[in-house]
Structure formats: structure tokens, C-alpha cells
Image 1 (cartoon, rainbow, N blue to C red):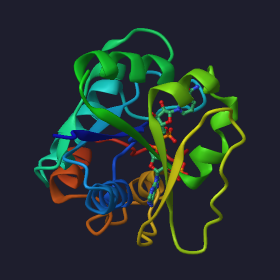
Image 2: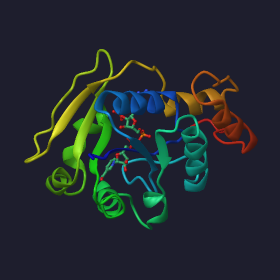
Image 3: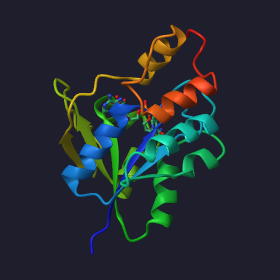
Image 4: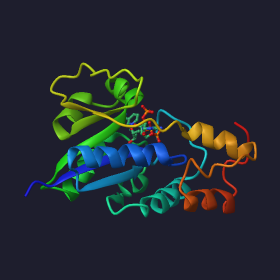
Amino acid sequence: MRVAVGILGGTFDPIHRGHLEAAASVADQLGLSTILLVPTGDPWQKTTHASREDRLAMTSLAAAESDVFTVSRVDIDRPGPTYTLDTLRDLREQYSEAELFFIVGADALAGLPSWRSPELLAEMATFVGVTRPGERFIDPDIAGLQVVRVDVPAVDVSSTQIRSRVAEGEPIDDLVPESVADYISSHRLYRESE
Ligand code: NAP
């Protein structure tokens, strides 16, 4: 039987409804049995605001929303900067029989040529470009890369917007699962303006 596993990597600082609904929609449309949510360790192209353990904890709380989600620690546990090449190597070992689908948003897909060893990435997984209404889908010019476009509903939320709402003392209840909102509040995350 074909086992198809989706992978959504992210800084998840914090994870939000946009991530979860896009991933669930991809699982539905492509018939994926599992979506691995993979928080990055040190995302070398971004600054993080919450620790890796806090980002992992929020991801685990969010994953409890649906049976399709599983959290993977591969990037959190690997020291040094997070490269998707290592993520896919580690997951290929754990899911040796599965077909792997690496899910990215339109901005991330456009930036793929700047990632480490894009031609090797192309051999390790099919890339899924989630495209929101009004977004341009750009298939990056990488030899051998297989990209599937999946249109997903718009969920107008970003991690940056959530952090600034928390810093301003505004509610975030519609933007993240309740358990994640409670975690952010009880651990006093994102209180400082950026
Ligand atoms: P992120 O900001 O937490 O976002 C995770 C994913 O969710 C991104 O693909 C993002 O696409 C998408 N997304 C965000 N908001 C969304 C919404 N409202 N609706 C639907 N989708 C939404 O994570 P990130 O920092 O971009 O990292 C993504 C992955 O790329 C990670 O696994 C990271 O390790 C990897 N990466 C690897 C390298 C490398 O290997 N050299 C370099 C950079 C990133 P958009 O960004 O398009 O919104």
C-alpha cells in the first residue's frame, strides 16, 4: 500500500491556524496519511523569538487538534543550523518505505534556490507549493525538482502578526488553537515589541 507522508517544516514562532489549515488541506487533497510538523532548530535565514523547546511545545499542543498531525523532533535535536537536506535525510531513514512530500508556502518555494544543495533536495522529496488566493505560484528552476501545486484557502495570519498582537496586549484567540494561546500567555512569550 502507498504510504504518503507530508512534511511541514517551520520556525513556528508561533505555529498558527494558517499553518494548520494549509497542511490539513494538502493532506486532504493529496491523500496523505500523516503530516509531520517539524519545528526548526536554528533557522539560519531567520531570527527566533521563542526558544526551540517553547516552539516545540506549542507545535505539540497544536498537533493535538487532528489525528493527521505528528510532531517530529529531528530538527530540534540536531545541533547547528537547520538545513532541509538534513531534515529529509533523517526522515528518509525513519520513513524508508514512504513517499515524502515537503510542503512549502509560495515565498518559501520561491526562495528554494538559496537553500543548501537544492539539486539534492530534488532527489529526496516531491515539493508541494501551497498557494493561497491571489498568490503567484513560481516553480523554481532547479534540475529534477518535482513540484505539485495545491491551492489552499486563505487564512490571513502570520507569526509576525501574532507576536505584535501579543506585545500590544491584543487577543489572538482566532489565530491559534486555544491551547497555544494559553501557552503563550502562561509562559509570557512575545511580550516585548520587536
Ligand atoms: P514559517 O515561517 O514558520 O512557515 C512555515 C511554512 O508555512 C512556510 O512554508 C510558510 O510559507 C507557510 N505559511 C506561513 N503562513 C501561512 C498561512 N497563513 N497560510 C499558509 N501557509 C503559511 O517557517 P520558515 O522559517 O519559512 O521555514 C519553512 C521551512 O523551510 C523550514 O523547514 C526551514 O528549515 C526550511 N528552510 C530551509 C532552508 C535551507 O535548507 N537552507 C532555508 C530556509 C528555510 P511562506 O513563507 O511562503 O508564507
